Every structure is written in structure tokens, then in C-alpha cells.
Length: 431
Image (cartoon, rainbow, N blue to C red):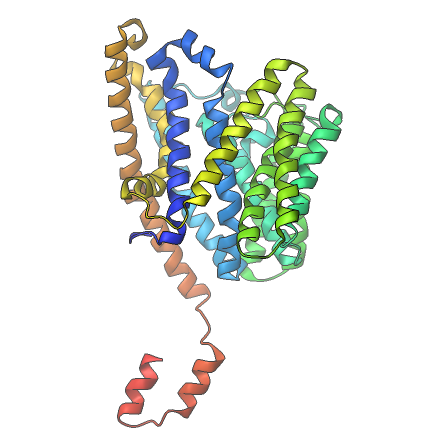
């Protein structure tokens, strides 16, 4: 959207932009604070996970809203693909360009398991396959894509209103099953990862094609729902997976469904009691699963802080959802996807521009940090204008061509009732 954000959605834009900025600051922190101070903060509060969990809550709120507003899986998937793939491909192209220039080195997994890496990038599911993405932050896209497919499947089978059960069920599974869940059932070897990546290309590709063509949709929906099993059995296929275990992967999906619970509660689709129970189960399970599975008090303290901060931030934003949001925050929200994808590339290139920044004094490092933020925000804005907006315009054109909106029955009745002469013709055209 290029126009002003409606007040009812501005808080989501602001929250998304804030979450992206938090992740940027987390990755910048070692350069500005130094590794020792960065790790000292990290031991008490993980800014990176805090930002990602906020992202996932917003996605959980927005994606079902978008799907149900369209009322059409075709419209939804055209919009999604044109929204996420252009910037994603642009980030990969930029990495390739900087690699050729010698500023970046490609991940070792590309050199040793090229087929699996390429196929994993087609579906955006690199982390769930166990290979490193071209950009490290691509790992979250694995869970976003899984969530899109699961929610689409639930929509097909008319199960999409049971969000509270999904949120609580996934969270409790992570807490109770925990370490008993397999981490690498489908990705323990090179051949297994290649086969899993190829299978996902076929499965995801056919599912999306079914939605776009409006054929075999029930089968595609069933396949989408079944994909919830992927993080349950292959959440940490290799050491290159960012998620530390399958139980943590299930928790991330539970957090997204928690965002959906908030959406459904706001629109009166579930009761206050059911929503409160589901959200409480997700929060306590996220803390408890990290405590019991990691087995130390530090994990309990860290994740209590992470989950508590996420809950307070989201609730504050939700409470102010009808307030006017400063335009700078909605602007951050609009460029947040490009900022999230590209800021790490800018950061990796930083040492080539300012060598040994960490060895200088605090004022110099702070100035480098401010300069980096300006460049990262400027790069994200350019990507938004040059890549994301054209993608959104393409989505509107494709949607208009493939699925024009039907004229409501009432309008058709009105048209038939209008005489075909004079003023009636003008009225008919305006209906």
C-alpha cells in the first residue's frame, strides 16, 4: 500500500517496524558495545528472539485476517508470493553480487550440498531442511511459510476458527514431548536433506498451484495441515539450523497461532476465557519448555524475560490500536520486511568500509552505529520502492486478471431495474 495506513492497522505496522529495528540493533550490538558487553546483555535478555517473537505474533494476527478478508486462497497466495518473493530474491542476488566482489563468502553448505541448498531456497524452508540460508535471517521465513500453508489448509477444511486449540496444543506438545521429539528425522544425512528439500518443492509447489488454479484444493489443504509435522520431527536437522530443537520449532508456530487468537478474540470469534487460557498456555509453555529441556536456571530467567517483554509490548500496542500512530513508525512498518532481509548484508559489508571499528573508542563506535542504521534504513527504503511496491502492483494486476471480483447480487438486481436511457445509463455505470 502506498497511501496512508488506516488507523485500525497502523498499530500493526508500528509493531512490525519496531520489531525489525530491534533485530537490527541486536545484530549491531557487538560492533557498538563490544562482544563482552553484548554477551552480558544477551545472558539476561535476548533482543533477537524478542524481536522475532513480536514478528511472529504480528504475522499470526495479520495472515488469517488477510486470508479471510480476501475470502479466496487464490487472491491470498498471489498477494503473498508477490509480497515476499521479490525482496527475497533481491537479497539473494545482492549476496551473490557481493560474493563475486569478494566482500562475502557463501555458506559452506552451498559448496558441499548445493542441490539441497538451492531447493531449500525455492520453498524458503532452509532452516527446516538443515541448511544455512543465503542470509542468516532467512531462518524465520521457514516458519512463516509453514504457517501460511497450515493456515491455508485449515481454511480449506473449515478448521480455521479453532486457533486457540492449535496455539495451546502446539505449545503443550513442545512442553510435554520436549526432547523426546526427533530433531532430524528427515535431515540427518546429505541424501536425506536433498530428498526432503526436493519433496518440499513438489509438495509446496503443487499446493500453491492448486490454490491458484482452484483444483484439487482439498488435497492441497490436507498437505498444508500435514506440514505442521515438519518442525515437529525435523526442527534441528543439523547444526546449521538456527532453531535449537523440534520442540522450539513447535513453540514458534504456537506463538504465531497466539497472534491469531488475539485477532479472533478481538472480532468476537472466540470467548475471552478460551483466549486467555490459550495465550497463558503458550506463554508458560515457552518458558517451561526452555527451562526443562535446557535444564538450567539461566534459561528460565532468560526466557521469562523474553516472553514477559514480548507479552507486555504486544499488549501495549494492542491497547493503543485506536490511537494515531506517528508516521515514522508506520513508515518503518512498510519497509520492515526489506530492512529485516537486508540489514545483515549491510552489516557484513561494514568491515570493508570501516575496518576494525571495534578497536576504537565508544564515541567512534557509536558514530559507526548511527551511520550503519542510516545506510540500512536507506537501503531498505530503496528496496521497498524499487522491489516491493512493483511486486504489490503486479499482485493487483494478476488478481484482477485471474480472479475479478464478482458483482454483488444486489448490484446486479439494481442494474437490471435501471432503465437503459438517459440518466439511468449513468446510474448503471456508477453501480
